[in-house]
Image 1 (cartoon, rainbow, N blue to C red):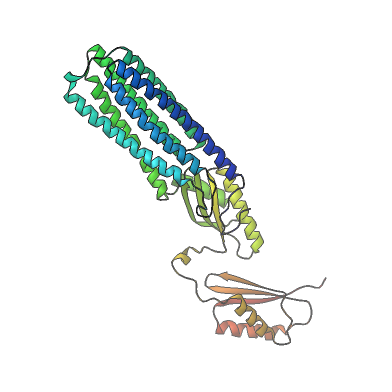
Image 2: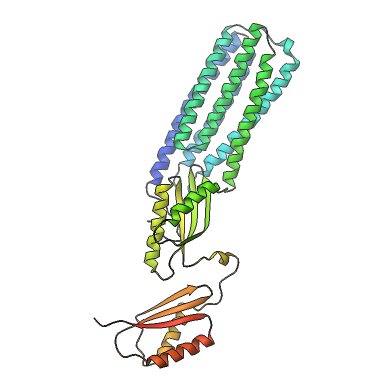
Length: 392
């Protein structure tokens, strides 16, 4: 159960994260096997058909195996439950891997642009190719596009940015295969310039995609919050919780597929601690039900808007020992012992409520005079009220 001022974690979160991690690993293993088979086929056909572009594309495919292994490691490590050194889990490993893959995409795109420029300068030196190379290029293109769609669908189902980054990396591979197919087809048809032009266009697209993925990972690493629209939905959910009369200092950040949220919730200042705790529980579970992406939430219960306390420290208000000492002095040596003393710290002053047992009391007029005199001497007290329990 969530508690005020304590980060909470549902018991079902750990097996869910492990299951998600296992799914990411299975999808990545499919990518590894596919890329390995395609790379071997491209090398064999490329050498046989004198298609060096296929051999180069095979080298590119082999480089994808390294990124697939990186994703596999990230998925396995990111699925580990929270521990002493990582109280919020290991989700940032996925974020770091997404950033690395985004950088790789930028590098691949720039490589296409560079290659396109070199090919435009040496169109007449391109070798003649065997038609079987075109068949292999088209087959590779279809396989890479199918791998892209399979991985992207799994990434969106699992809400795994690292898988989405790898899916778009597969799309860049499909684009490179498209370039190879266009180049081979253009060469066979007598238009060798089509290959470098297509390579340039694809290079720009890949650079754009890599920058977008890397920027999203950077924003997550620097704890960028949710959009204003998403924040407004969260505010409505929290403020509609029974017992909540105000909200301030709502903070959010992302960690892989999770959203972490902190909220300062204002309640009636005179309710009990247990009722305030129950309201915090209600806020937590309502947010989790309405916003499944929020998997960690810290609910801080406030009796008033304490936003200024982050800048201006609280004044020297009396603590409980000082208050109880004052109450005993007001009651006198012969006065009854209080059953309960409630202190309300509101604003820069204290309000005290004293519950007394049944029986004779200090004369009310004398007690009022003592209270008025003490408040005049110590303005940190706004009021001191005495109540007596009614006999059954």
